[in-house]
Length: 353
Image (cartoon, rainbow, N blue to C red; front, side, top):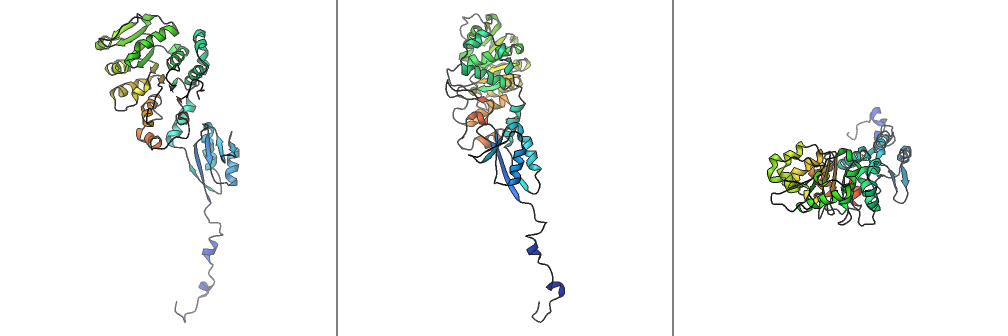
């Protein structure tokens, strides 16, 4: 506008829209960030800056509680869907919800969907129950609580073999049983089964190599060299990881509902032939029990194939798993909080989670 030009009435009386923008009703609702994560307690934690509408929302959530010391709300995983629905429905604010990592979400969903079989515990013979130490009883109940699919990671010498045998005694109607084990432990397993379950020697089948070992227990022995004529028809069938590769087709055609993988860290290498041969057999079984005192010797990635054997629908992708667990961050919680299907007691006196 030039210096001599008059202001038009419309220009001189036009409303100051920049000023009204701060007070008008068209202003976008405030944004509130809510972060959900897995707490060390096993519950879901919600962290957010104070806002009355958010507080009121969590007060409506079943079984949610405020933890003043940590300044966060917590609720059980079973209330997760309800929490997300309530937060999405809050009016007058825009909730930016940081949801659980998809892998963690799948793991919790799978854990909540697993049938609880602890009622089967009393099917174990009284003689066997009486020989179990308290923490071993807890280990058996843990496996049953997780539907018969779990990894027992007790330290060496705490009786993982006995616990696995005790679990099989609770699900006798699903026999026969297949046991994958290192070559040196095949006859040890046969002897333990015979001792604890009173199974006749001829009903315990052990697959040996052509030159393999003595058979002082009188077990039913077959040799992996003659795979064309092998029939795994024992009540308990014991085979080495090396023989699994040779007999893979036979094993996949068999209908073993119960499979035990002893020293399951033998499956840590995803590129190994024995891993690729053994994992599908475990995935196919209704009940799968993995045993190892050292499931991950040095890196979390060593757990991936073992977890995938138990829950392939949860642990789908090694890159997704690696991105979450293998980025050089020290865990602040016990392993069992990250992996709900893993027991990891530190000593004989520890209780299994």
